[in-house]
Length: 290
Image 1 (cartoon, one colour):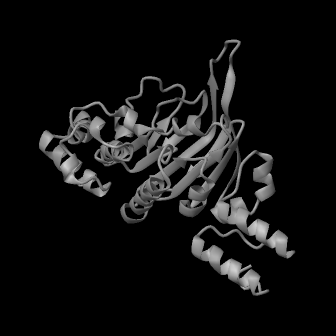
Image 2: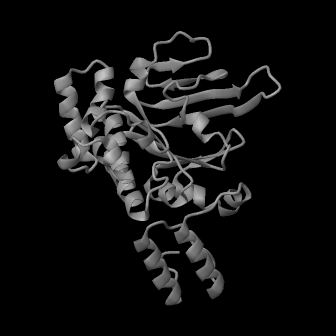
């Protein structure tokens, strides 16, 4: 299910003294089954953009196509429920959305809200709680008695239980320790690769964007400034820094090392193994991987 933005503008507080264009004539395409990250400074329009994909926001002008579903300004009475069954949204701090008596009841709520029977919803809930790595001994506890990381897993399972084709992640690792961050990102990476789910992630973590994405979109002041594969985007290091953005820590480390050795920078690398290979080459006076 491809997603296409066609010249989309979104204006907050239209026709008031507080009018502001949060998106300014944005056009882009996100291919079915891809992992796309949106990066940009706070206020660049990232969250506004993704909230158009499942109809939480409507464009002021332009249109968004999500598969065969088209969202346009004039279609104000559209039934968006079928779209929201196909596009799941994991908000920042999704554990704040939990409300049921037990974890498994919370996960059942989404599919039952879309017309799934209680028995089927329970089956899905058990499958999804297992998938996100929450042991069964926690399923019948209050979600509010769980740890922060466990609560986040319950919230994610609730989105997955609806069986969406697209999942939008808004800062999915916010507030988690490094181990929890890695576990959550590996979960979404596995869902993307094994289940062919389209993943769209808003993030300030350049390392995650570089490591997991097929495509990176760079937003600034409501406009799409760059789009491309991670290696292409992060090779434009100075352009990113001019927008107030960082680069992955592996690149920062190698930049310092090449400066110290008086050597030229090579292509960007993002994994620890690639970084180790590059360091070995540089220290040996070679440039096999540069």
